[in-house]
Image (tube, rainbow, N blue to C red):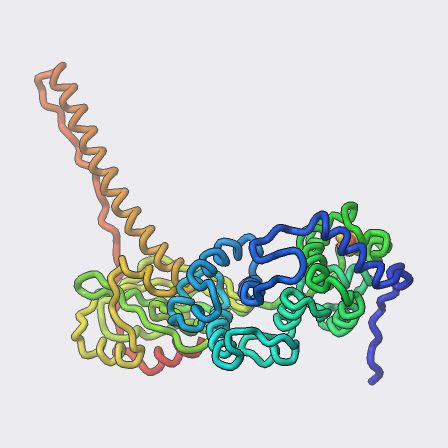
Length: 430
Ligand code: SF4
């Protein structure tokens, strides 16, 4: 089958790519963003460039800034990072998501220290061999730290180039052409500034929605602008999300500590969590499941919703109190390898945003319960005051109605003997 050619005809074809680069650089000299990991020209510390670039993948600049400061304060050099415990790294990464990035970052620091004496290799090919460094990060370190003309292609660059060259096909089809154009546009001098310039243009002017074409230095070269196609480029087919749903088990011991275990695989590997499981479903409710061990389980009527890149997840919280020596529980503990942790110590464990939502939800429930008790108490006090006032006027003692507190109907779930094997497997499959 003949290969479909990508149409990139536009006014920009006639413009010199070097002219475009030079316009971008002049614009950057005036409007470039002032960011904590940026300097004019090449950055003297590749470690700073590397950490910021890894953090910025799939995350916005505004989200990254506070994380970057904290990270640099705790791990100011690659040697300190390499020497650190991975749990400390994950603790600082909490909330940034994509935790495998943090683990690879740590692994890469150890490799750079052990194999390169703590200095990043300077060639694109050598950088590419390091853990967690793909074509994008290798090109960004090469250009931003070593001023080498390696073209970076991220979401911002894709948007600018596809619009500039009026590429109307679906994104997957035009990616190779975009990389080719990006290499052509990369100047031999000021590579670091040029990389920052094209990324800044995509982030601040050529934005996904409502780009500010009137302020764009490439306006007269832009194919999409000339053809009135800006809103249609790049053509991105939305990712279909899979819906998953299942129970989460909040297990307390007699002193109120909660059972947590460490995940060893998948997206959330290395983080601590409350045991949970999920299956693909079409409904927003947990599919049939067995509890992990025999106990008085209560459905809290609380659920957590969380969106991963490709999954829409709903977790329904069940809770129980267990005796740590219960033989059934011990079997479950042996398989999941977790332990009970006082709730005040949760801050010392790296949890994903998903699990933080669970903690927040349960804390919120606790606070609401306390607040409602305080309100009851206040109401009673108020009534006492009323009573005193009335005593001044009347001799008759008024009847005080005690607030009626309805006992919540808690459904206790009668369970069958659990199939622990299945639970463990489903938990680790996610
Ligand atoms: S003119 Fe508009 S669409 Fe074209 S590159 Fe500039 S901001 Fe983007």
